[in-house]
Amino acid sequence: MLTTLLVLLMINTTVAVITVFREPRDIAATWAWILVLILIPVLGFIIYSFAGRKLSQRRLFAYQGQDTSAMNEKIADLIQEADERGKREGFVPHFNETQASLVQAQSLVTLFQNINQTSLATKNRVKFLTSGRAFFDHLKEDLRQAEKNINLEFYTFYSDKLGHEIRDILVERARAGVEVHVIYDALGSFGTTKRFFAPLRAAGGHAAPFLKRRLTLIDFQLNFRDHRKIVVIDGKIGYVGGFNIGDQYLGRDKKFGHWRDTHLRMTGSGVYSLQAHFLLDWNASDPKRPMAVTSDCYFPPLSLALQGKSNLQIVTSGPETDDEQIKMGYIRLIQLAKKRCWIQTPYLIPDDSTFDALRIAANSGVDVRIMVPCMPDHPFVYRATQYYAAQLAKYGIKIYYYKNGFLHAKTMVVDDHLASVGSANLDFRSFKLNFEVNAFLYDSDLAHHLAHVFKQDLTVSSEQTVTSFAQQGRWLVFKQYVARLLAPIL
Image (cartoon, rainbow, N blue to C red; front, side):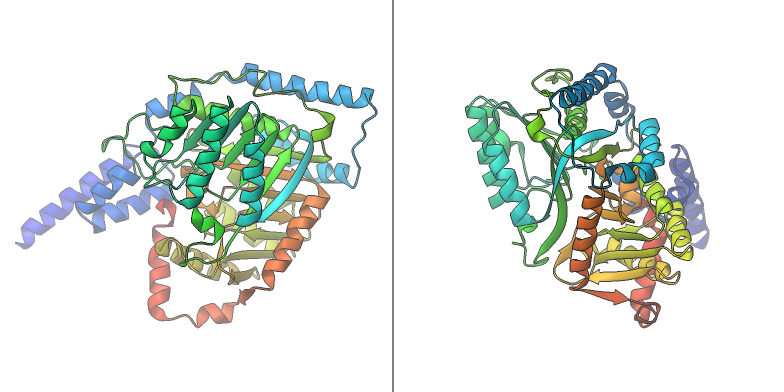
């Protein structure tokens, strides 16, 4: 009997090693998967088949095979035309340290130009929305005013009360002749079926699950989720941030209560970049009904009435490349900090490079503060968050638990000029596995506003110290250490 068990264990271990090493991945994820496959025979392989496989070559080609040169050239021409028109008409945006922001951010701008082919978007007007009520009130009003086209992309589009309300607005605009396209993630929108979007399709609109051309068991994967939140209306108004579409984001879920998130609404040249990324996502998800990536209806001229003073870059990242663009942006932001680096994230599971960047900043005298929720939405992930929070606290980083409901915001504020708002968490999944989008902001007023919001959230948060972490129960600490071992694949 013992001999049989040893033989089976050797076979299981051998197959586990072959299974994991046959696909290239970073060493941390490699060892985490080997641990799962060895410690959980049979079941571990089932889990791996859904959550461990790399993105298929078919899906990779859907992204990598798209030619973006003409679209990028069109966007550059539109921005240049807006600059020249502004000069002719005497339009001079309010200064307010905008140049100072760009001086500090120049290396970050160059980084994104090189690894994400993302141009600096100028002349933007940005408004922050930090409650579900404010976000959805603005969104619904803008959707109702749409005249030509509406493009929405959300990780979660639930078929609940709010989901039906948003869908019905889209149906009404489609019947009025507005072109409507919706991308949703099949897993993130679990429970929302094709039937839910049937009224939209009947009205002439379109809806497609992200990169899911067939929903079969063989094709199903838990990884590589479309975590982006993009809205573009008439090519003039854009939204990006952390909110999804569902009742819980309005605080209607008793489990979470108040939902604290951060989204931004923008007009200006940054909308062109959001539009470009949506078009690429749509054409990769529904190649039988492609959208014209250089159409004037998606990229209208930038009118003076929509312009502001803020500079920003729209940055995307995903498993179709190994560049980890948003993670690189986060690290560069941390490196640029001289006075403060304040972070909000629901999931704090940094890889070694991000952990070291935070540790170096704190040891260099930077005021590093990280705010996370006081409650889990994914218990196993939350234990890993607690582990890393405790470790970072040892280096003088101030850790806060937000206690007024659930904190879902993904923000970073650096000094007086730089900030980031988007969909990417400070964790392995957002860095390596999910398709994400962030706005990196180079404007002192925007940075000061986000810092003010952070201070307000501090009033309903509790600081966690080295002492308080040391007082945690042994069983809780054990769960945290186990979660940490599997952090690269959570």
